[in-house]
Image (cartoon, rainbow, N blue to C red; front, side):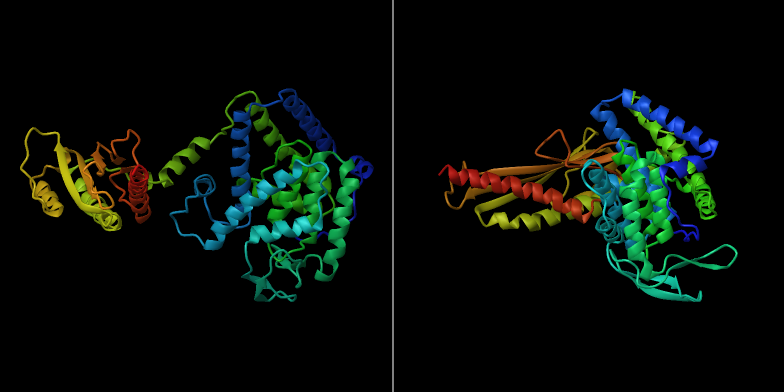
Length: 469
């Protein structure tokens, strides 16, 4: 993501602090004060800790990927990571895969940080790269003379070709040469295990991030890994993770540019300031206060807008909308279920199926036996807005291994119609199998889920009956 600095010397505690500006000292004092306040509030209640981590997790995943060009929105990221729901808007498969993979490594570095005896290694860094990139892929790149090309990106391996960035002034700036990467990565890990430990955690985390970016050891994923390493060190020191938000990208890059020019404490200041945000959020959570921020209500509204079924609009019960859902959801489910459950029919002497209708009106015409004709008649009579429920009953009679009339098994589905929702209930349960707005039809997966529920129930009943013989 960034270019390599020409001035890449190390920093120990003495040189870091003697070169630090008053601004860095001031911010670090604020960090220490807020960290002490958080420590005094420990242990944090488990529910507050969970709520806080979910906030960090979502912000970290979304922001770090979005900084690198991932186009999933904040709301789509939340739906994907919390509910495993794919975006409704078009995105590349790689964007979805890498967002989920990044969530995996966020959990991984958090786990690493809990083990104080565990040492960070180059193998760990390569494993992070392999995980977040998921699989090899082709990507646009620049040749050493700045010409556009395409290159196969390997995962979990140090780069074999030079990588570079085109600066705003048109110049091409090259990162560490491929042949020097193993040596410089080894030096970075050695520095982190020795000198890095003697620095203030915020300073060490910032310099670990910056030095890694300067090396730029991989063909892709360097920016995300630099932020993973930064937060690994903070978590290891009982500090919360830093989130570089996408709306603050300019300040983030400007701080990195100052470090390139030799003012590395400026980047340390930037990281420490972001850490203050995380600490303030943690203190609120520890006190049982809300961790929501200004503007979070907008994210919630947008999330509701994108989540099913609201993303398809809200429909109210009417003659037309009920006819549509009966035609494309209820009757297809009945037909599909009858076909799938026909396997059970071979165990019994006979099977009986029946549809019954209930309306809010006092009287209505007797429907034809054929459900398609019945629904068509109710629709033409403009009665479907008054439908309350439809029952689909199936009875299997006369178990062939012992055709006693007591060996009968019955089951039923109820399709219940309310003002904005239609629900499917199994055997009169108070908890519906499915509840949907009229704007949404039943999906093939939902069909399978409902029929599977019926099939399991009947199979268990038959097994129980046979066991009693």
